[in-house]
Image (cartoon, rainbow, N blue to C red; front, side):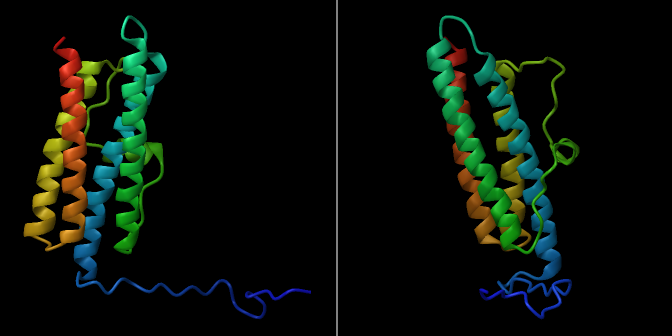
Length: 170
């Protein structure tokens, strides 16, 4: 019989070791809330982008399907980074669509499929939210790690918005 690391141990007893990274517990909790709000925005925007990817039709079908597919993947990767940052700070990353809807700062549409202009507006809204979040993280909470992540997210959304804006202006 092989070695079982759980033999003889009380598996009900868990010890949580909090991060000792120069941010106190209250600060980490507030930043985790900021990250979970940003994560909620990203997840909702990801779903909207995927919906456009699935439902695109017309003359620019191939170009837009490629664009939305690439943006969808980038948003998934960004969501992972944000969730991982929340976990690095000792918090919990949200994981329920209902909770994401409760925490998102985006306006949910009534239309079944979002349009490109609405998607552009959502990217621009997220950029504004992220600017405020990044400023708080660095000025109020002195968390350069989260600030850096949010600044990278801003740049990603700015590029995505620029691409969508360029398409819409045609």
